[in-house]
Length: 262
Image (cartoon, rainbow, N blue to C red):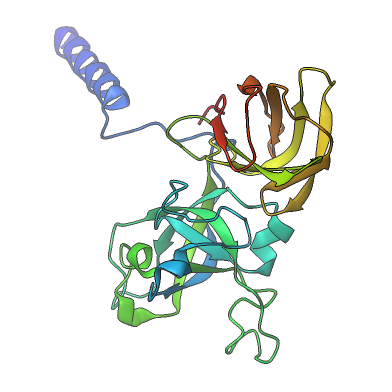
């Protein structure tokens, strides 16, 4: 009897250990890695013209060229947070509609645009992006991964997650003369940017102001100086990239720096 009991305990411990290390039973991410599921709704747009994928309130420009592709979303007023949310990543899943939902699926999208309110309609009518609605507008290619396109305005659940990106943070330098603007994109970790500093070879660290979306600016003559950047994300993590742009940098060029942990 004692031998059988010891054997049973050994088998139970071995099975528990196997499950704990199996890729079929991944560990649950910490609270810092993702938030709880919340309710929202989602609609889609069909790309009728290539220009539909260019621009946006976050300033990323051509989403295909900047690496975001179709895994993007425009967010309603309560989610957009006046542009602070640009670059953040969300996981969405379709719920509460067995007719239109694709079971067991979810998508991960990056916030790249703003869905403007339409106060000519009630928030529970045509004003889908009006406060206090939490609403996502997706490319149809993303929408169809979680629901049948005929569903149109779908109830979904969403949660904020950490972003995973290939390569480093990208800095695209714009402006003219002593006006310098920098578009910051491809940010991992929290994804959104809360503060930026820039440093030339002959300057100290200079704080940049948010122009719009993830475009940051300042007035300073930084020409013919190698440039370094300090980027702080919304979760308080700071990444410093030294001498990202060489002395020969020019307006319109992009450079790659260090990356946040995902």
